[in-house]
Image (cartoon, rainbow, N blue to C red):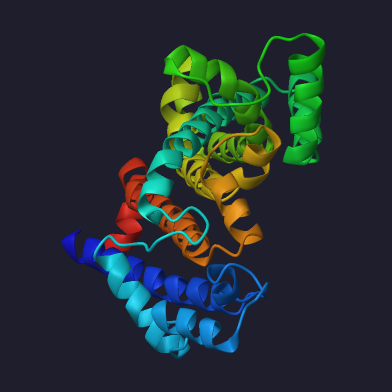
Length: 316
């Protein structure tokens, strides 16, 4: 177990290192010159002033040297200073990260409860219930998140006036009230995916021999579903829920922009539009780190839920 955990951590560090270089190189190669922005624009910009700005911010150094300096600062908790806001990037992210985490957490709660519930219902109640769940989830999966956001705002925000359409609110009740529509917009597509995976995993587990033996021994159907079918189907369900949640960390850009939320996603959009390279690099690195950490946690938890995976890995 310790050896596997060590290998997992080593792979995590190597992946983060490679991802950080790709992010830095991509932002470095992006159109636009940050030195021009730092110098105050092209108005009355002289070559001497531009060269001085490049030297001050180390923009005249090679890519590898700039990356090494940036990575060393990141390892010491210094993500740089924003070109636009003239503030520490870490402080900007820290002020906006709670909104993004609350949005992702709320959306995760919605698609896990409704998605897994719908998948279990479709697998247990065959016939028209199964067809209704499959049809509804197919429709939900085909609607992009920004289209769902526009529809929910138009119906529940403007016409009925049940929910606010901008801002994140304050306090627990206010935050839940303000983030209901954004979280639901994010969760619709994920709900459809999770329900499909849950349904198929339940059907595969129900076709196994030990389930037939349990039915033949007279065990109540409710106990069979809970102890033999759902338990054996938890592995793929957990994996899919983890992957979808990790993807949501990088998918808040559209929703935060549509609902006017001051989160990390909207901060990334503003940083790209204004060529605020330190902010863009830090936010992208944060999103990649979150995705890698969540997927690795799911990989560690999976054998704890499914003894068959643990036995296979031990034998290997």
